[in-house]
Length: 339
Ligand code: NAD
Ligand code: UFG
Picture 1 (tube, helix red, strand yellow):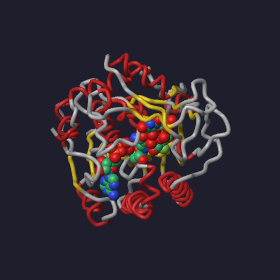
Picture 2 (tube, rainbow, N blue to C red):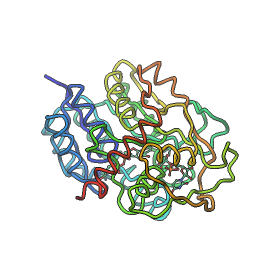
Picture 3 (spheres, rainbow, N blue to C red):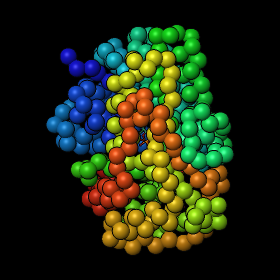
Picture 4 (cartoon, rainbow, N blue to C red):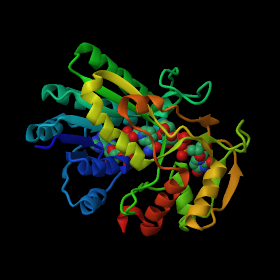
């Protein structure tokens, strides 16, 4: 019998891609999601692509009794925990919601897992835990800090998970620190579907290219980077998802808590991303330079050699494929899943 994995937040951007790859790797998948930032259509399309079914429960992770019902109905060999709120700016406006959805939910989840004797979890952390790094590339032993409530939830959850692992050596935990996920599955059927005005660069650029927005605002061209615009480590969402499958495969053998950076090790500037997108989409991307966005850092890219050594994982998609796959999704689905 195949192993069954619970994916929280599995209807979302990264969760839906990971669900797809888990199914292709032979796992059964159960998704819980409250659909606050996603649509069930993503999972229908995953089913369409794979020809397999996904059990879905519309559950808010803050509701422990509903979560327990899911654990009553299924025996999980592991959990991949994506669910949470993720908008950096919004987190400063409604911090309590971020602590509630991210930290309280995670505590509920860990308690429920303990209750049902499921002690393997892979958690979505973020490169934001490195704050403003002193140098690049960033390795996992760099000092951590947070500059906003969203980042603090990631840091706190990492600490909570480390405490849990110390309290009971039966736990196997993997903390994955994502750099900047972009791209979409090759089918063009699933991808990132932000609600309202996108906060992140790539969805904004693709909405300009498809004609939904007039122009991109580039937040500052006076950083200490080669062209003055911010530099980030963009990673294809399918590569990122593949790392989760490998994490589940290695979690027992690794034991305790492990922390891995997930990036490509390459940094690209905002202007380089605009150019790459214009090339990949053959559409112009109008932009203007505006002031810096508060809290942004100049540059950030990963040393991901630890994930290569311990998980046998390495990013395989280059920049041009990332933008072409983003564009295929965006141009086929200009209104996202809501069409
Ligand atoms: P997403 O918003 O597409 O997915 C998150 C999902 O969680 C959504 O489907 C949402 O409906 C669900 N959710 C939120 N609160 C919930 C709750 N209380 N109960 C049940 N479901 C809930 O985001 P994503 O980009 O797929 O990100 C997944 C995870 O990766 C998040 O934890 C995010 O913080 C982390 N992460 C994302 C990025 C990024 O740039 N996308 C970078 C680093 C880390
Ligand atoms: N940028 C613009 N204009 C925009 C949006 C972004 O110029 O409209 C610039 C930013 O200033 C930055 C770069 O594009 O230089 C990337 O910005 P994103 O908002 O796409 O990504 P960030 O690196 O700021 O943050 C993202 C996620 C965080 C996560 C972090 C590290 O939003 O949640 O990556 O993983 F923590």
